[in-house]
Length: 579
Image (cartoon, rainbow, N blue to C red):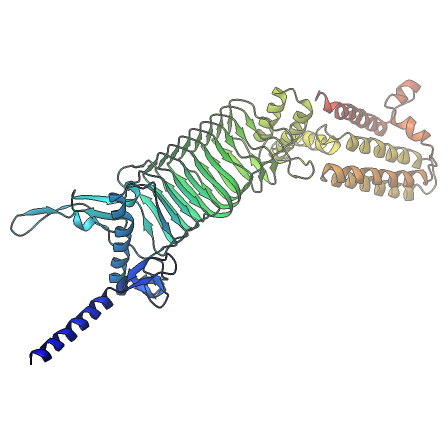
């Protein structure tokens, strides 16, 4: 009997030992090669709870992810994070905490500190409840500690499946995110008072849906490198350098009411769909260079130091109440759409050297306390073409800038634009004589800028006058008069059409048409292929020197030709003086 009892007890002990061993059995994760108990391990994936895929932890309903069925797994996950990365940190001094290839699920609920009073009037705080996510409760000191206060933190190749909010944490050491993926958004936000972050924050080659900063003071560098989708920042202060670099395309960068104490740089970025710096202040150098900005907004922005937009392409852009207190550089920049610098102040040198304005530029409400440099501005990057100004004042401002620099050659071009805009302002019904003078001046010489156009009128008016003067002595006078008026009407039409061309095509057309008109003239009944009659006619003083009588028609011709010769002289001299 005693023997049977002993055997039974031995069997029970063996079974209990096997059960205990089974319960304590550990599995090795194929990612980190560490051992984990059954409840912290996914045997199907052969990965621990930190590194396993978590697609089956939530269900998607109406576009929203529901994690309710995995709350226990989520608690297990964050328990391991706290034990492995936070508790170890408070026992051992380490220089760096590394999260490697971890897939982060939904966060646990965060609790604000409060004192709770029970039904018996006893009070206690909820400090224990606050030990969630990247925080843990220290029973010995009754304090909350977080992973970011112990050592520098590095997230390498991690995936964040839900929003990650770091607003509650005291960040005292540097944080870097390397090759991480953020499926949702990353928040640094403190809605009530400004929160200070003393550490450097680096995002290198991270696939991020959206960043959101609000009421944060960054004491060290903030760097985004290789990847960035959307960044929004409100009422924050950057005490050190801010740098975005080596990114192909960014969807949106939006800073509102923020202050940058050190250098702000967007470098080696190809495209930004939307860039907004409204209400922000830049106390140091700003470099936004060699970027295509599809939409940009600079409302009430202050640039206290250099603002460099070298070779940047602006599509839809708005400069409104913008202050450039130091040198502003738009060298070789391109404005694809209409641009208006409304209530914009340039307190020091503004450089628009070789800037391309594809459409109209408006400087009417701009203030230049120091004259700008507009040398080489054009409407075409490959070859020079006059820019389009939206009003006469814009042309006058640019003309005045060149005159202040004694650059008469360039000033003359904008003098012509100023006259063209004045011509547009004049209405025949209100000021007919001024309208007529400006139209004549424009058609005759493009406001004293095109000597070849003047020469076209001189030569061809002389051809038609000589032709008509000989008709009076020939047979079939009606036939020749008809031809003459047809010839003259065609000449006027050609002149008006040519005046609308750009300079290159206008000059080619003038040369070809003049040759054609000469062939018509020399082969007519006038028989003046050696241009003897033409030469005598073109001399404005020929009749006066011969003492011959002057007909009214000839008088009109002589007045016109004298005016055109004067315009020819002025147009030729326009490269040195306008008058």
